[in-house]
Image 1: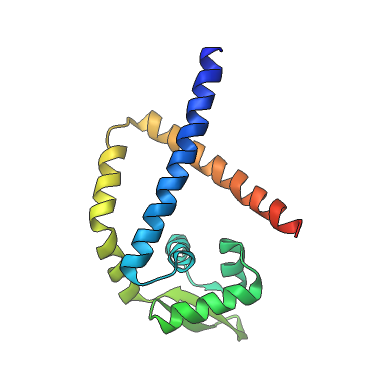
Image 2: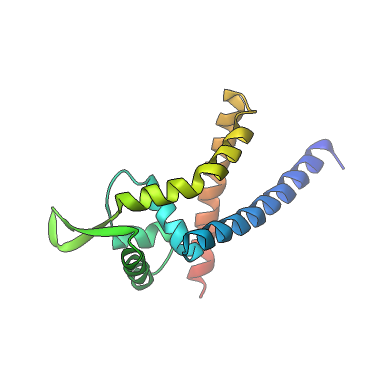
Length: 154
């Protein structure tokens, strides 16, 4: 087997291990915060958005159906993690934003893990970090596309 083929096999295996470890970590963090893992992922995705989003945007971000996304937002609102605000451009629609207290609660829970992940990233130079970021962006795009493809088959 060539060096490239061996390296590709190693990358695939490590990607699978990474995903499994991340799934375990996400469950543990969700448990710590008293959330369902999907709810925690939604909160993390909302954190990345530049401002409030619609329930339709929540559906797009999470891959949920519009009805499931609305129920997710209802749960997050009940848990005090998000607030709904009227859309200034369309009064019939509400926008969802993270509650400021939720940001603090989640930031506190991420303090130790964030430091640990930061220590790992600190071992890479700028060019390596660019490569890692590119890989993660591209594989996330593939993952979203494949999830849509698999969901469309149902």
